[in-house]
Length: 172
Image 1 (cartoon, rainbow, N blue to C red):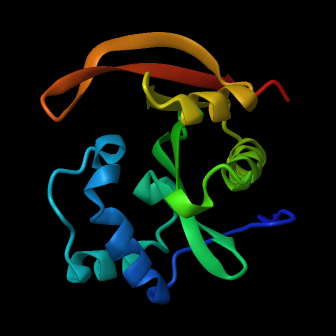
Image 2: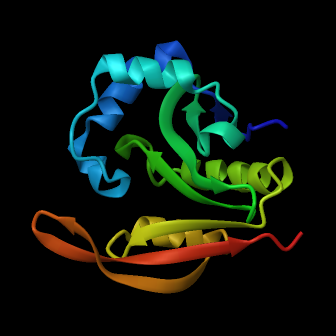
């Protein structure tokens, strides 16, 4: 399957992505959505990249780099992959300077098609804090339905936030 659109390419992690991953994963501004609490070393990230070849059925997750003009601009992930129940969580991160340019929407379109066609998933879900209006709009645009709210689910800067659960059922 071709994971390319007019402006972006989704591809596997490569060793040369180490600096991009190091900068992104250690940006504490992203930690809220990734549940990260401590920085990652280059050694740990090198191991992560080296093991990223694992089959999704073994690793239960998949991360692809979102590339624009041969430059990494973000990542898109499947996590909590459950082949028995044919579902997985999905998350996306686009660097600030590349947001609001349609790249996230293109990546999500490609990744949804991949998940439903190649992995034969029945459903995808996304967890989004209620104050993340951009992500709520993105997933809503792609027909994800709000199915519930988890109250006081995330704590950031000593403030609890609600998290919305969005779900997309494969109707194909």
